[in-house]
Image 1 (spheres, protein in one colour):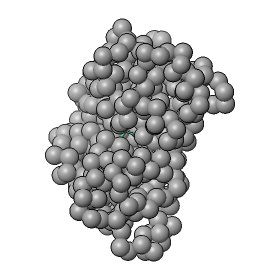
Image 2 (cartoon, rainbow, N blue to C red):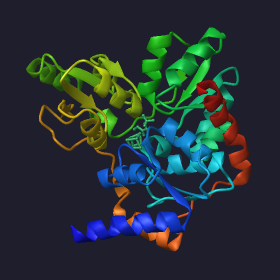
Image 3 (cartoon, helix red, strand yellow):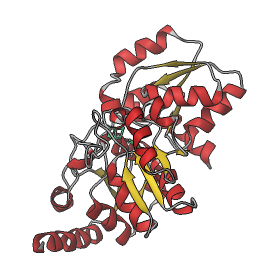
Image 4 (cartoon, rainbow, N blue to C red):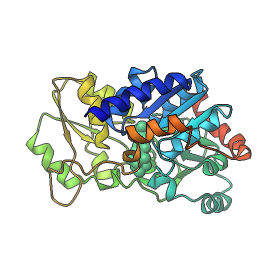
Length: 319
Ligand code: 13P
Ligand code: SF4
């Protein structure tokens, strides 16, 4: 415990010395989320992380999350130094959408507007017309559909089919998935809801359709936390990475949050839904990268120059 307190103090000191700010995602270790808030950084969903990093005057951003979040920060602010506690923290959606295969897919469908999820490599974003996050993907596709555009969507098939159903847009879907959210089970969720008939169900749209269909609210991590605070209910079943429960419980004290079931016929799985790559971020490696200025994110400037257009389209739309 003492070591933890010492590490936290060391990180606070180093952030000041390095003119660095900590930008964290809701799925990382609770101590890192609290540190980000306590030191003038931010803890948020991936859309707000991108905006915060772009707008903050600090010369160094430390991104506690997964690689695509660090790359997005670098693409938006090439002049800043972007550090990450562990550069191997990737994402199954990014891994499942290699840039060369994706480019070939796009080449086969030149008539389609290419919309990619933030959870992709810089090279995939460079090939896209638009990048979106879960907070705003639905609105952007609705807008494109109203303009008569046909869409090529990658990589998350569940988010893609959710948006397709909501908007009626013509969408050709890459078949990727998130290894965490793909595990949520519709039948078991239905059983759990019967045990808690008054509970509201909060679902991240990377989940399978038979889970999304049972949701009271579908949204990004920030949107789900907002719903937990604002909805008039005292019990919530939550289908997203359980790292989010730290913030939900802090933001809505007195309310009860239950993890949605994941594996097999167990309705009581307590810690299945946690991203192994988000979990690579800890106090120790955060302190070390600040100390040594190690683990810097680099993006090929030529790729960055292309990728920034698809990200800026989203940010301009959101503004
Ligand atoms: P959010 O943009 O909702 O924070 O999601 C990012 C992510 O990786 C979800 O698994
Ligand atoms: Fe990627 Fe899923 Fe982890 Fe989010 S939770 S970073 S989508 S693997």
